[in-house]
Image (cartoon, rainbow, N blue to C red; front, side, top):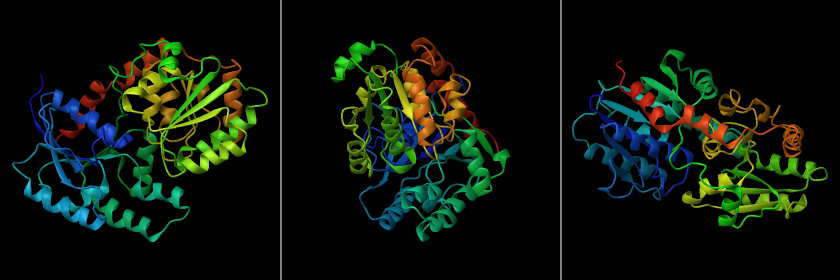
Length: 383
């Protein structure tokens, strides 16, 4: 057993309450670091009160409902008040919440920033243009936070390239460690028929699943157009869309206008305990992202449940699928290429990997217990 150490993490919210990919990553990582007998403190916004059932210490710095400047001021003041002793390593995950405490962090403790995405750049596809707020995010908050960090973890080479090219971080400071999946929870323990029965899904069609936040960059509008294109050739499919977001109403209207109401169901938020069942109920998961997909957590969750995934060649997703099922990566993000690949899969022209193969690939490469130890090694490395 390695020597016990003290690790301080600064995240965003609390995963069970805020079901985002970043929140889930931090939740899973801190649990596993604590399982290595490390003393782990997680600071964040909107965290619950101390919970004796958890192996980690939770420090709530402020409420997520307060105004942004009040929130940042509270983060700084409350972080100062709650400091006892000095950690062996510091792991930051979100530039906005890291920014107020940069000058408070002990100078002789290594700071690792886990880069989950370019905050300012990600704002552009949603707003359609680069605004003053995006420049402030980049220069005032992101750049200053990254300049204070000693080393970086990225979940894919694609995001390593962004960190290097857009933020001028030297490659020697960047460590590529993929995200992980809880292989004890995302497990293929149900037949598709039983899984569908539990969810009330039809058994007479090929089920496609897309578990996404409903925003522009995830490409669900392109996916709907692709399905409309293939419907005259292949009609025995049903797309289940899991998730919420600002585009929900627009996507529902698009589906209706494309004549897909009998082929697309918007399920909204799906409780976390039902997500593994949904993956097992599907014949294929779809990730039609258009930009900034640094890893693709839903991709490895699906594989761990034994369900193959079709994705666009965006961000870190091809890094996951290319060694395993390269035929399930579309040629581009365009509607025509998504449609072409879907037709080939639904007509059986491209054989899908088996449940056993999908599961084994996820276990061999993305088991959170293994991933957490790689992260720990980077966090505790000497300067």
